[in-house]
Image 1: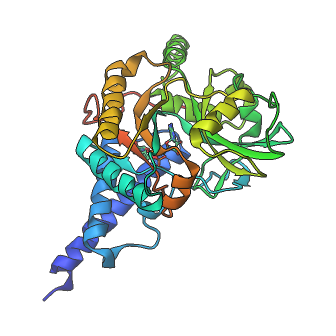
Image 2: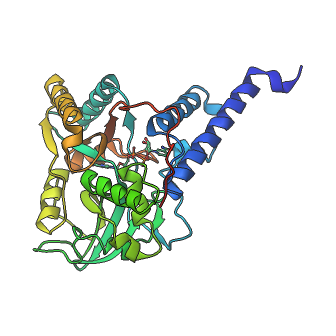
Image 3: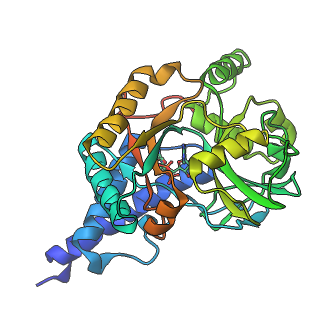
Length: 345
Ligand code: NAD
């Protein structure tokens, strides 16, 4: 009989189609800052792709989007190789998925450090774009987008126009060479004001603050970026020439002391069992209620093992750390057709 009609052939066909849909959505989102799908629609396609790959490992393509972080760096910018790789985050789409992740991760921590009372940072997931800042001898020398996690785009001149990012670190104790990672975002208030003034000028509005931030930062002309209200909160470090710190929380304190903007929304929860899990769920519920009262938009909550010893013990996959995960809030509205309005840069 015709090979095209076998279940395997139709499976491959569905798989290939999904890969292409996800890839096209990623190009629109990461390269063009003009998404063609809602995040919820994208997440659903991506999940289906992951499920197919889990059920049928024999069909996994080497270049499947599930093996990649973000998008390729655009050729419009000079490439920058990050000193240490930048990762994405594992997504959890329900409280039960969070519970499974937490119990598995807590068990791994307990196995690596018997008797320890681990701490967890519960952070808001800022809806912006990841940027890697490099400070050499305390001076900002390079800023790059995440790109594919290995190579990002050089946006140094654009980042220099963001007022909250120090050109020079304050205080003392910073290492000679330091990579600081964080999220560049546009505050909700600035986003509304920008879109209002674009409407007055007859320009197309931005679809959401994330696209406004990405489109504003990824400009060839830093003067355009300078005219856009961008902010940043830092949420991690990369390569460094020596830091005597033992946890992520301590690192945030040090970074704040050096003048870097850290998130005011981060909470800490301690333990391995139900009380810790309940604590995390309470933070998720609280920020779910207060979501639109924060300075910036959020699309979820990030839970991180705080202790660097725990982070090292848990390690990474090729795409995500095993010591952190992102709970994603359910979409607030479902659009069948996302963008009636045109997205522009
Ligand atoms: P992600 O955005 O889900 O999570 C990883 C990123 O979260 C990190 O790189 C970091 O930049 C950011 N982040 C924000 N707050 C943080 C914090 N407190 N600590 C650590 N990191 C924090 O992952 P991703 O791989 O960049 O993108 C996947 C998501 O992007 C999808 O789930 C979807 O929402 C969206 N997306 C949408 C489309 C579309 O077509 N609409 C296409 C591609 C991706």
